[in-house]
Image 1 (cartoon, one colour):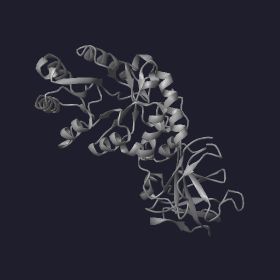
Image 2 (cartoon, rainbow, N blue to C red):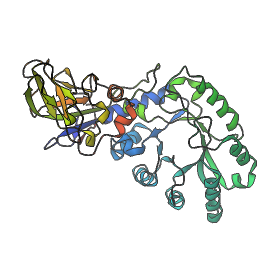
Image 3 (cartoon, rainbow, N blue to C red):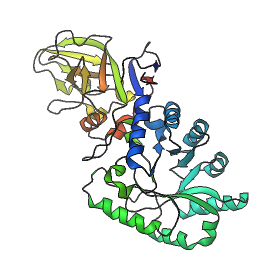
Image 4 (spheres, rainbow, N blue to C red):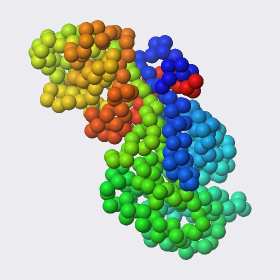
Length: 380
């Protein structure tokens, strides 16, 4: 992040900040688009662009050249259409509730995962006298959403239903793409190739953030990264050509001495073994710091970065506060009103996830609304 980058947002009264580098998000998307060319590169902006702010993120991605977006819910579809009036927008959760009419009116394409939803969309098409655009989702081994093989073959043979639709995409989703060595990736690729052959001429999409790193065989016509656009590294062995785009920091509220034998935090799970200095920081599980990042006696937990030094969490993460041991930091490094870094240089989203026995995706999407969001709008 450049020092002279123009920012929006205010630090006044902020207990914590989430700094979103929009310029880096655009750069990340361009790097992924270049990697998968000639396949097209979409952007997944569901869950408020992974909690970073869909309005700002969609705008910068449109400016960068992205013309296809994936969201999950009807509310997200409405927001995305307002922000990207000319884009292709796919709704991953399909026909949620009574969303069919709204999707048709908005020009949003549902990703249809059941024969019932496909029949409903075909019926709406016939009622309107036009073949409405949609995608279909086929299951190749994730066993979550998606048409099973028998239903894929039934649909392919149902010429009447297919004639009522305008299929714009056939998608599936990889179960183990974060591990390139897992043979399930190849099994799903072969299943996808076999089943999509039943829909000749329809564009295909299999890979998301980690899947696109498995190589060109997985790219097909369209890839749909989300996590990687925001700087996340999902693959265990093949890092994506992206850089971090998010920094999270919270204020130090107090620094206090704790005598040997004294405990810190709820349930007295951590006891000082030496004279200690404990910093209390204005972040907790209400802000997205997982409670599982807690560090009771005998178990390591999460860390923060203060003045360039790592400091370990001690005791339990509570709703609004965490406590960290700053005894080994240089004198005066931890000062009230200064900020401690929770995610940033030296502390990646993946580091935070590992410390909490979860994944970076969860860390990112759980970032709470109380922290002030600051947007780096350019780098000039």
